[in-house]
Image (cartoon, rainbow, N blue to C red):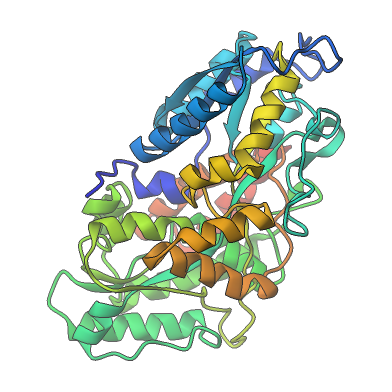
Length: 439
């Protein structure tokens, strides 16, 4: 059994590092770069550094691919610099400000604009990036204004409702039809599970600090987090979200505020869902494997519920699980891009990487990986395949300052669930502070 230490708060809400803005200011929008994109850069002989966040399994399989590549490319060395998520962004911001960023960077979508607009990332569109085999539409992500294509999608994940089938059966509750259900239906079902099971077991988690649910709610109501670089929702929209969350707390369908706070700070194996004490949780599709590793109960992936009164309008989307970027300060940009091409487009790399970072964007590689999968990993890929025709456009990338969204929702959401703010007050604080952050 794999031990997972990443708090679910970080897995769902990829919060911004407090030092990010201050540290990157040193890069400046017109920062000098030692990057070379001409023929002087020798992709067949280079010393590269590569950084990513993640657990032990990710580190192991990534190192396997690095070893393979080094064995096939004489003179290329790639030094791995993995980190846990809690320290990753502070370390990267400090390195970047000092002109010492790793060549190859695993990047989260919330921070692409923060780095790109300060000149810290290379425009990959002129650096030999190969996305010719990508599934239609998946190569488009990762472009930031005048900075160009600063990131390439490393995998795709879908937001899901992960359901504990065994707990539903224990409670005598039928599974919902996820093609038609709404958030009101989800609340009603959760309340029935809580009522039918022993104390300390709940039908659902609370979503007041859940950025996935917040984004889904906005999409389902015709809004977005970001629209043309500005805030894409208003106080009335956010009030509706918090009012629904308030109804969940009042119903007793999920844990109280204190237990919710504790649960979101816990690791997967210690969480309510991970210990079989919660019927439903919102997660990313690539997290199903982690939950299966710590929970023997039967699990099932389902679509997120739709807006009340609008069953079927799920407004699902495929999130780039992460991006790969190259530092603009890299002395060997062509060699860095060559490795990224290998990482994303080669059968040899895919045999080791599987779907740990999400579903491969390369169509041929994805089918190769699918043929090797079984159990929950295969179910996850098949589920994402099933919903892909239903998904909408990719969410707009966060503008500069937008990376504060997750930490702000966490702070405001906690104040709301402890009744320090009412729904309208929480909504106003969200809008006011986010507007100021991106101004």
